[in-house]
Image (cartoon, rainbow, N blue to C red):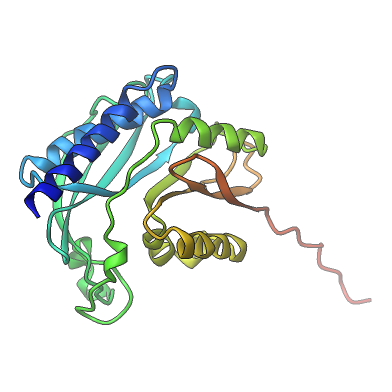
Length: 254
């Protein structure tokens, strides 16, 4: 068992090193540098910690590797040898080179599901919502992930080829397909996107996927894009575009 754990750690380190050392791929190099920093922080207390999800919140894709005035909040979840609890490391990082812009916040989280109620709001920072109290998540939702060293470059190229503006602001979640399918809010994904995700999950439940969601366009017309991406190849699995609802002006009775 110990040897298997050491092999897993070695593979994770190799993957992150490859991600941060890619030549000609500034966006992936930035992501790799951030993940290396958060992985080191997690392993100070848990040497066996393995990355299972990462999220970038409210960031501009075009700024990665280019705009030294931009930063983003990045949170990573790490398995720590316990099927109930995990470690979350988060912080703010420069989108120019991945350097930390704040101190790390490290907290213990739980995979157990707990109801969310207003009176327990102060406790909900360490809990997830929905389902029965103390009902553990399925084991397939706790899988370590590996991310291709060209994941972001290929993803951004594919989005550009589909006419997506990368100058807007986005959120990105990367996790195993089974976990994304289980935890993604229904309001975040369309029926077509959910169908593509569930199909991919049935074939490759442990393969990582990226769910990238736009926060609106620079034009302010309300259009948003949500895309599902294979994190190993950077290929687009499905794209959903939402446009503002156009209402006809009301008519007065004659």
